[in-house]
Image 1 (cartoon, rainbow, N blue to C red):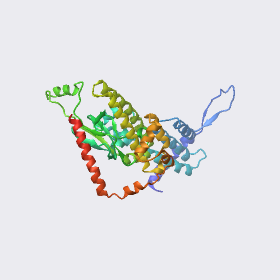
Image 2 (image 1 turned 135 degrees about the vertical axis):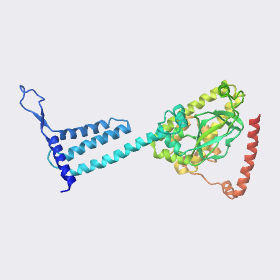
Image 3 (image 1 turned 90 degrees about the horizontal axis):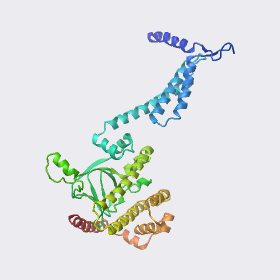
Image 4 (image 1 turned 30 degrees about the horizontal axis):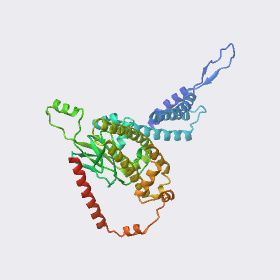
Amino acid sequence: MHPQESRLNPLIQSLTNTLLKPRSIPLIPRWISPQHYSFNLSECFGHSSFILVALSYYSDDFLQLRLMAVLGSTSMLVFTYFHPHGRILWLPLKWNLLFIAINSYRIGKVLLDRWKAEKMDPGLKKFREDHLYVMDGVDFLKLVKIAKEEVFEEGDVVLLQGFPNPHIRVVLEGELEVRRDGTLTYILEEGNFISEAGLHAGLMLTGTIESCASIVVGKNYDIDHRKEYRNKVEGRGDIPMKNKVRLLCWDRTELIHLLESDKSLRNSLKAALSWDIVRKLKLQRHMLTQNRVQNPAAWTRKREDQGISRYASILQNMLRHPDEVKNMSEVLTKYRIIHHIEDGDHERALAKCGWTEEEFRKGEKESTCEEDEFDDITEEEFLNNRWRKVKRFSSKLVRSMTN
């Protein structure tokens, strides 16, 4: 016999004697019934295993559930090894060892993810606490891992109206101006998302979305003089601070694939986007009170036009994959209800994409001679035409910013 086995055998025998020793509890007084109820500690481990499993069904916390599962499997491990019948039940023992290993791995992964979330950049942690508090720190870390940070200075153009945009962004710092045909329609501040394109309603669109407006870094607007006061505190006198914008940027397709694989992250991001829409609506009201809108009637028309154009961009993305239109029809209806897209607006948006309502219902585009002619245009001719449009629109945008 191996020396180590000779040392373990007395210990195992001692445990066996202790756990299988019959014990009794006089539940009923002897003067009523002389019967005794006996038990042993091994049976207690067996009962506690099932009790822990039952309690885990009531737990909503992932980590708590896994801990209970490990404790329950460990208790069952003791019961199957020191079985009251005097023989080891190897089949359930081996299965419980596997369950303990799996749940221990999951517990370790959760604790590691929480530790990494705590070690995240302090600036990003504060940003989440201030603006994305509906999102768990671990979920936010998943988003940060696949994002890149962008920095823009005053006068830079982030997006151009009418051009494909493959990204979703959120403002970390600074202020952006959103301009439709050169007219300021609304502003974006810290915590606002850019180009989410119906993600809050559940539209999981991949690829590019045509931008319905240009987004530029305008001059610093400081109506309450908070930044001017900060300048004086930091010893910079009355030097005006230039508007510097930091963004967190995601590739739309990569982000959508991550959300499709993680339901918890998808739900928390949708909640954050819903709050973001409310904040944007409040910011539009503040624009009126701060006199940043010169002509409210024209401003309202531009906003409505921008909303229809945004909806048309969403349809344009969906119509690239006609087979998926029917699958997303319910979510698209939800988006229309949230943003008050009437039937007439829907038809106009389809017309802008070159589709009819009947073609949209069928999910199939009827080919025309004009489309066949368009297919004959060379890539060089197409790029030349687009470049001329860029130069015309850029000059118009610069004139509107300098006025």
